[in-house]
Image: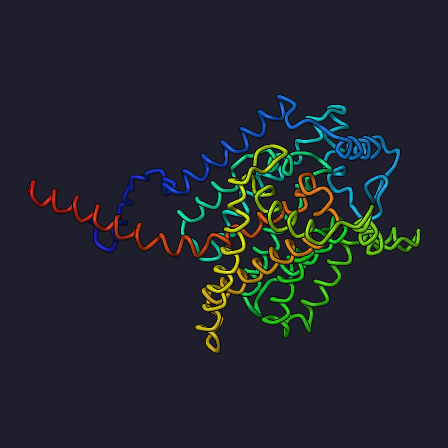
Length: 407
C-alpha cells in the first residue's frame, strides 16, 4: 500500500427484504377492502333503494353542479346542512346525475371512517388485534346500517368519520401538550363547526370531547390556540351563521320545532322506541324493518357495556390522577368522553317525539353510536386479552419444546 494514502473502507451491501405488514394489520386491510367492496357491489345493484330525502339531496347537488344555486340547508328544512350535495356536485358535473354518482362520496366517507377508527383505536392504547376487532364490527353490513352509510341525505354518513376525526385530534392535542401545533387546533375547530352546520345529532360528542380539551388544555385555550380554534369553528359554521344573519333563521328553533312535529308521543312509547328498539336497529342486530323479540338482546347489552366501559375508564383516571398526563390517562379520558357522547346521543333520541312515533325509520338518528365502538368494546377486550396471551404463550412454549426435542 502506498505510504500516506489511506484505504477507503468498502461499502457493505445489505440485502433489503420488503417489510411485511403485521398479521392483524394485513387482516384489517383485507376486512376493510371486503367491506368497501361489498358496499360498492350494492351500489351497482341499486341497493338500498333510494327515497325522497336522497332525491332532494341529489337535486341540491345538481343545482350546485350547474351553478343554479348553492343551498345551505336541505330543501324544506332550516337546520340540515347540504355537505353531501357539495361533495357529490363535482362528480355530477363530470359524469351526470345518477344515484350511483350521488352515493360515491358516501362510500368514500365510510372507507375513511374505517381508517380513522383503526387509527383511533391504536392511539387509545389498543393493540392491532383489538383494532382489527373494531374494524370487523364496523364492517358488518346489516340493512339499517348500510342505509345509514350509503343513502345520501337519509343516514348522515359524514357524521361518523367527522366524529372519529375529532376524537383522534383530541388524543393528539391532549398528549402533545403545550407544543401542540396550531393546525391541530384549527382542524378540531373546523370539523366541529362543520358538524354544527350539518346536523346536531353528533353534538353530544362535540360537547364531551370539547369539555375534555377545556379541562386539560385550558391554558393553551386561553392563548393563541383558543383564538385559532374559535376562528376555525366560526369558519366551519359559516354557512349556517351567514344564512341566519341574512334571512333571520334560527337553526335551534328549527331543530326544536322538527322534534315536536305531529301529535306528542306517549313517554312509554318514546322510551321503548329509544332504549329498546333504537340500539339494536341502529347497530344492525334486527331484521329489515322489524325487530323480533330474540333480536332485542343488544338493548340490554348496550347499556351494560356502556356502564362497564365508563366505569373502567373512570377507574383508570382515578388511578392515574395527580401524576403526569400519560398516554394511559389520556386514553381513559377520551374513552370516557366518547362514552358520554354516545349516552347523550341515546338520551336525546329517547326523549324525542320520533322515537315514539316512528322508531323503525327514525333509528337512523342513532347511527353515530358507531363512533364510540373503540371505547364501548374496551372492557370486553381487556377481559379476553389475558386469556389470548396465555394461549399464545402455551403455543409458543410447545413449539419451543418440540424444537429442543428434535435437536
